[in-house]
Length: 209
Ligand SMILES: [Fe+2]
Image (tube, rainbow, N blue to C red; front, top):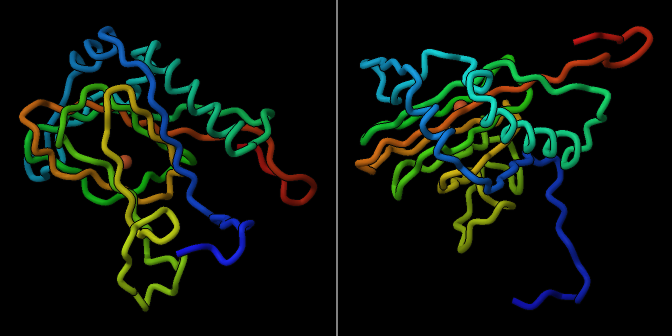
């Protein structure tokens, strides 16, 4: 359908800004992640996690890559003042075998989170973001009309196909899950949480975090 006028725009107000970038993945990072110690909870089917919760501190090359993007996302894309300092709080590696997935969850005790894909293959499990609690966005969710096209403006779920070196950053409150891996190859990723340190507010509402 033709627009009623030539000049128009839609502004995605009050959005969940999702950052996606494609970076290089090196053999040294791949080897370092694959040689971490992993544990499995056989009662769940959500893959294996590294025993270490400070994986980025153990692989400085990977931390430099992650922080290059996290700094750009928070201070440039989101315009958070540079007098506040981003700090890595925890990071862990995940190994998904065939049939593994991750349930819908968000990350507490964190402001921004993300994941970087270390080793992927076709059908190894897409990451899906969800509109938690049916928060009203483009329509009151009590009414759900059929859509002929899903876009960022009208979707309540958004999926991304991972690739080696892809990094995805998001506010930690955004719910996400990982689809079942249908690949025969192990899928490695590293997830991380970041906090913002500094002095916030003034007078009666001042706090140092
Ligand atoms: Fe997560």
